[in-house]
Image (cartoon, rainbow, N blue to C red; front, side, top):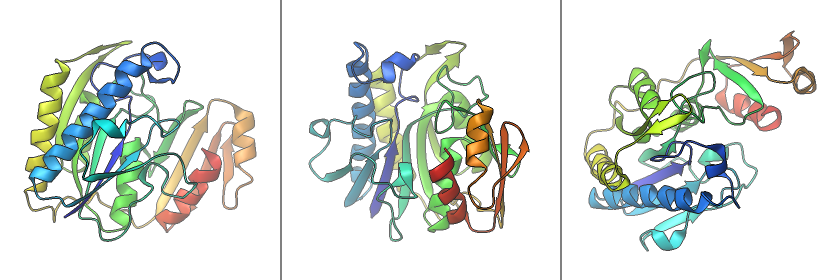
Length: 265
């Protein structure tokens, strides 16, 4: 069984400040360690379920956060940004059996996480077919375009509820609950064990119903915090301004949407 893991940091246990996500800050090392621990737990669960090939994409900021020495020897780690359309899913391809998301977070314009955002903090929101999109939605749709089901996600409580609304068959673990600018969490050792057990359980089941539904076409709306950025983005082929700060784009192929995202996010 081939398993792909995409890992972010804003949804790991306890994190609640942007400074804790940034290389060089005193608290960053603590949450880099927790990010690595949660990914490690997912790897242990996947291995126990029979995964013989586990590829991890470090998908936060520099994409150089996970300490491979804190992972099992049987995994591969994709670090850095290769510049491909898949972004946070770089390395995945047809032939993988399942996708796992670790450390994911609530989308922009939601109160489920003190660090809620979608892709970057210069965006007020991204809507796909009139739904405010999370990074989970953007990346799970890419997996669906390749025919790969989502088995498991860990992240803040609000996001896990959104995931189950998208597909009730996906196994979830809530790592924390957003409380305004704070986070309420269980002890990390409990969360790590829940991730390990949840991943093993998810990969031991029939995943034939775990594809996130892929729409027939895509109406995309991006609202920028700065109208100048929206104007610049409107020059991408097919894009148009519908408000000074809002961009609209239509496509039938999701890969075209990802191309637009690459240049406009």
